Image (cartoon, rainbow, N blue to C red):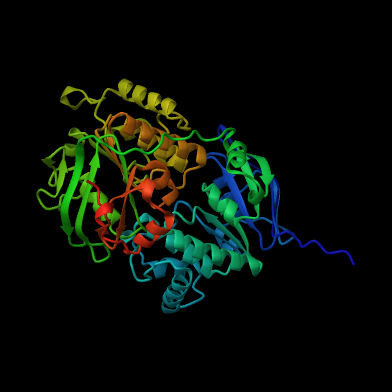
Length: 510
């Protein structure tokens, strides 16, 4: 007898979604088989997020048909999607900050369990999948990476038939990534279908058995990523291969930023204490700080940027000058600029237009007496948008209207255009597609080539290995010895993320 072809878990036929002036999805068709791990690739603005929101019921399509398990469905809202068996982990989180982790998850489960039972389930799932989540912590006390873990656990607790994951591994060590991949493969073997959105081509090629590539709101190709090279995937996605970055080098410039014996108690009951942190960044080098989110990176970034002035006197020096008690404005005047990891809320005001968001860190258009030169401000914003390839509906477009990658290009560009002598950037390409990530990294490398001292906080080891000249690893509020990237391995750095570093004199930077 002939083998029966199983009914696809999900079928999209000619899905179209229009916004004023934008055709977000243009007759998109997609098919996901039961038990398939199906990647969706595309630049920021390619239409991936809109398509996923249509599947999950957040957005209604203008045209097209969606079938789930062979039956036509009109998903009106996420509650109906979850009832059908569809769960999604968003890139931009949907959590109530004033509630605890368990309360957030309990709300998403429609009260099927008691709050105590939900807290116990979270602890079990978190342990099973290697995700460090405390069910009793309030969400406002969590870092960006910790919030993503909450979203992943919440989705897994619904036991979905179709799980949509948007950039799920940026908060994990290499060992934890492999463990998560094992979980996803097990879910797939049990019949769960997975839509996997990621800009990490090596992950997609290692994990996924099918891939739909989008460009400009349309499907530009369908392939088996296991049989497709990085270069071919890049060409399908952006029309070309990302440019290669210049080779790593040993810096011989002056020490621009130095931290000595920085010890701080944790700023909140859920924070991380810093213990005897020491680092140096020289002119003309890029130094990376690796580590799993929640190990003190946020606390260190706050005292380096000046958001916190709690650091002991003399513990932070810029060109030899003690800046430990200086605020962000005073540090910017001395040439230190920062791009924080939280784009909306810290790096940009969501409701303000791009031109006015320049004023957060740039004062070029402020004239004597505090008057604002709007013409100059708008011209600066327009030049930045053009120079950095930011896709936006003009200089007055609210920051919250931009895709993650385009907003990040604007924020990084805003700080780079200030010509800093020291630039600190956190998660520079988190959730950003290959094309935008390559552009941002090229801009950071250009800063190094111009003699700037650059410090990069990132949880993506591939990015740190590609971008940085030296690495430190942060674990439990402590910083490892410095390690030249040319001598580092993924396995070694992954072990150091657990605090297992050898105090070898040869590893310590001069």
